[in-house]
Structures are given as structure tokens and as C-alpha cells.
Amino acid sequence: MKTCSERFQIGNEMKWETPDPGIRRQIMGYDGQLMMVKVVFEKGAVGTVHTHYHSQATYVASGKFELTIGGEKRILTTGDGYYVAPDEPHGCVCLEAGTLIDTFSPMRADFLGI
Image 1 (tube, rainbow, N blue to C red):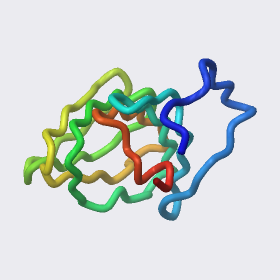
Image 2: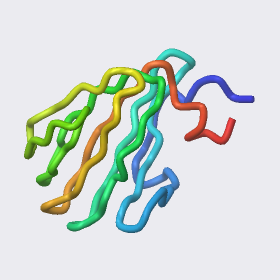
Image 3: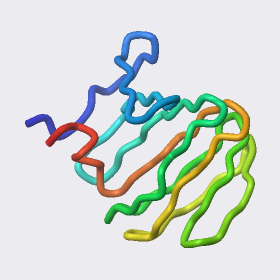
Image 4: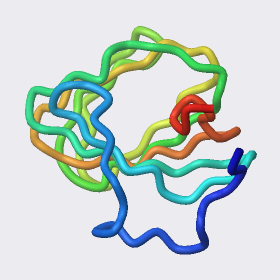
């Protein structure tokens, strides 16, 4: 089992995963304590409300998203960010196509299939 990423992640050399319709992700750098994931959304794509035990901080690299965290809704655009506490319900709807940069602590072993 691999416990960390390569030192460099070259976007056009990395595979994309499709976790849900209209959503693609690339797993960037990670080790046991930290993971960064690039998530690209098409307009109208839905990140279904879910929970996980990881802390999450996300940066909106582009686009416009309606975020729901713990029952509170906000519209976020390029340059904004958000934090999700462990086990807090959260999800989003993509209002304008864009990219989120998710970070998790500890890493999401489920994203790696381990």
C-alpha cells in the first residue's frame, strides 16, 4: 500500500476520476496526514450532501457554487473558501462551471481505494 504521493503532480500526466455525473477529480499530493484534491464541476453538477471524519478546507479556484454546510447555505465564487468540521454534513451545487481545491486531514484513504 502506497502511503504518499510522488513529489510532483503534473496535471496533464495524471488520471481523472469521475465520482459523480459532471464531476471530475485528480488526487494531488498526499501522505497519511494530508491530501489535496482538484475537483472540476460542470454547471449544474451536484456534490451530494455527505459526511466524513476528516477535516476539510476548500478553495474556490474558479466558478460559482451554492454550498451547504451544517444546514447553512452560502454562494461562493472564485477566491472564496470554506471549512468543514469532521462529521459535519455538507454538499454543493455548481452554479457556474468551476474548480474546487479540497484539502483533507487526514488523507482520504477511500479516494485511493485503501
